[in-house]
Structure formats: C-alpha cells, structure tokens
Image (tube, rainbow, N blue to C red):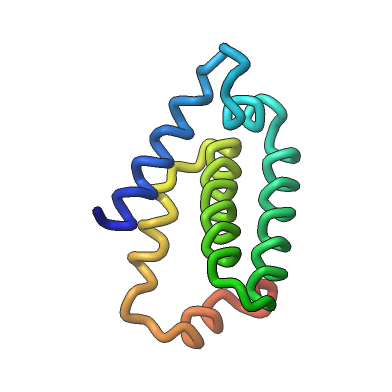
Length: 110
C-alpha cells in the first residue's frame, strides 16, 4: 500500500466527515468548530512532533507525525482546499532545487 494512496484516502474520508451530523465524529467536530480551531490543533500537533523529534523514541515521532498529517488534512478541508491541489504544487516543484524554489518565492516566504 503506498503512502500517497493512504493520504489520498484519508483526505477523502475527512471530506466525507464534513456532512456527518451524528456527533460521533471527531473530524466532523473539528470541521464544525471552524478553521481557527483546526489551525490551532494543527499547531499543537506540530509542536508535539518537534518535541518528540528531539527525544529518543522513534515510536513517539511516528505517532506525532501521523497526527500532524491528519490535522494538516483537516485544516486543508476546513479551508476547502483539496489535497490534490497540494500534490500538484509539490509535483510542480519536483526537479527544482529547494534553494532555487525558495528563492523564487521572494523574501516574504520562508
């Protein structure tokens, strides 16, 4: 099973949770709370990943990285930005030096 397929399937599942009104879906609750809540949760998970990465437990890094990816997809869904759009941006950057790509964005991007 490829990682891309897993992420694409997860993005589709998250999208389907937008219409879940059962109250039993954590994803639906996040989406209902709005982009600000989704962004805050993503930030919290990103910090947890940084902390885990500075530790010695690879298992913790794996778990936190999975949380970051999930919450990134929820954040994108909250903005109604299809995951495929992100993949297209990344695909467009393939074959370009990261330093060149960053320089092409100007000084305001980091």
